[in-house]
Length: 113
Image 1 (cartoon, rainbow, N blue to C red):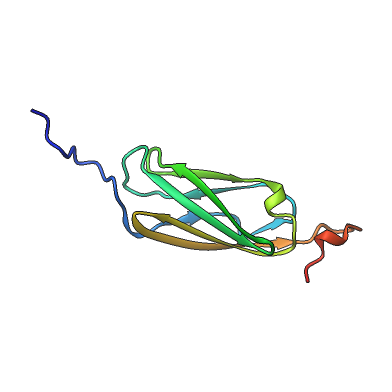
Image 2: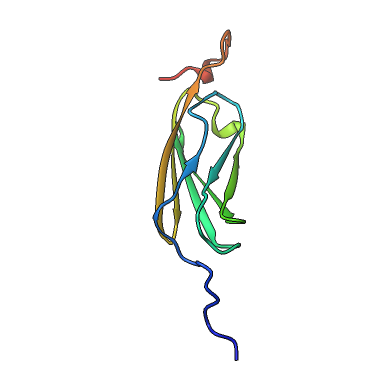
């Protein structure tokens, strides 16, 4: 008979480290990593990105203690800042990314209010 628990961590508590650049150029895609943590492969983590035009929600699974999110450039197109909030089980993490304007741009949609 198999035991019901194999020793792998399937629900997290505490802090979730978020690895993200401090600054990127507006409109640039960015990779955000959550971890390292002790979690079984496949444990899900959510990432909420809050920017100038509302939230975007992403989901990924931990593999070897890390989860990776690719944030598309259309979600970073307005200069200012992005708030990142990660959650898995009872664990939480927060980070921010500064979005600098594209130098020499004539696009008015890239100008911060």
